Length: 187
Image (cartoon, rainbow, N blue to C red; front, side):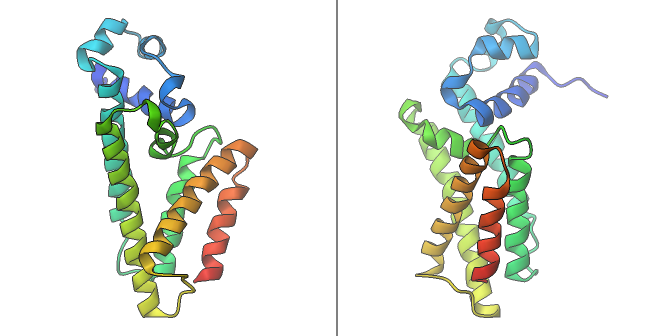
């Protein structure tokens, strides 16, 4: 098995650190200890923390959005929503982390414009996918959707993000499961 590059190891440690601690909850010193390199090595690959965070957001976004796109659009909308919900389950699996983009959205005051735009893109991609599935559900059978599929998608995505926060706060997946159960009632 090939050993991951230093750059890869830095990103592999950065993503869970952000998911657990946020932007201000980790430093290059933390990473240097985890990766086993000097902070100057981290600066070589990522001159500033903002560069590192933007790269982490881009990688995380690509991975999550690829997982969403892998959900078979031929499945019934209700099944697609259940598979989407499973992605949130895997994010909060240990109860100590939440969606990287959701965590950073809470830290928006500290972030550069490039990261803010990347976060907006991630949120909108999730909302667009949810709206598409809700539209499909309306065609398949009546979904109980308040407002338009677009506004319902924004509400649903906000509920999932909030459910992750509450699950972490109360150290239980129950809050996230309640959102999934509410979705079943609506469909």
